[in-house]
Length: 203
Image (cartoon, rainbow, N blue to C red; front, top):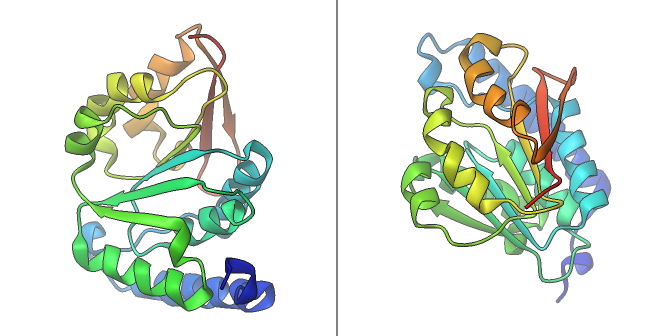
């Protein structure tokens, strides 16, 4: 049975809206930010799906699965890409398991390889080149990822980072590395909490 035999577009949209509303209410009750699911905003999630559809990548990496809201939308955007390799990382197995259930519920679980692993450990061992990387994890570690990200991107690769307007002070130094690197064309987009997009234009 192929993906298209059981994926239902209307149900997917309804499921995602319900999930976002439920988890937003959950987050509002949490006094410790680390307990929050902290999903991307719906317009940011849809933008990610659009980029995936336009780019038609062969290899995708998401750093920061959480409970899978952005993962759902990335998988949605990749659903017509044959043989795509989509890896989503999170250090929290409980959250990764929840994300798996959400993906199964909408018929997209076969598109995603959910890995429970520290991002620094994964990136330091990685030898793959990715066409599309989405970064939405603990911001204090971003600078540790910089050189690994350079090695994982090639001409035409896209890096997107979330929360760059809402938490600009925490990510400015990290983003400056890409803005000041002539290998990249960079834009900050006023979508959701702010998205930063760096496109690799040189080796």
